[in-house]
Length: 186
Image 1 (spheres, rainbow, N blue to C red):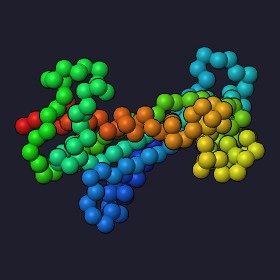
Image 2: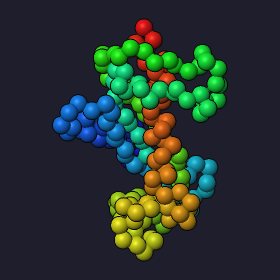
Image 3: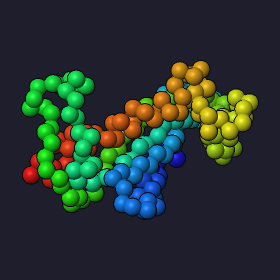
């Protein structure tokens, strides 16, 4: 539990995906959901032993790639999608480059607090989030459907939507290699 452990889990998944590929991949992606515990600071509690901390749900995205031209082909060439559309802000295509080093991209989803009933089952009874979610919301295998975020937002955000922005943000080193990969501009 915790952001650092969750990020490490996403990195391990990306490394494992990279290692399992039959051919060397351009990218390997690891997603890992996790919980961050926050004690209820400043809130008076009658009995500290019975206090349930706030559990914040979040996920880390880790993308393993390289500085090769193949990986940086996704760079921001579409000026219509960029806030600054001046010609100098858009990296221009270069000759093919072989990979010289690994490059990591990371991003984290937004955080949301779990309901106290779910937090109680996770913290006090040691349940995994998916099982606690199923019990509280009287469903089966919710983690493979809309996820906790889906049921808490009445479907406004499902698991796929929840990860979408963070995955795109984790690609920024390859979208703007001129800003993130020192060897790219040399």
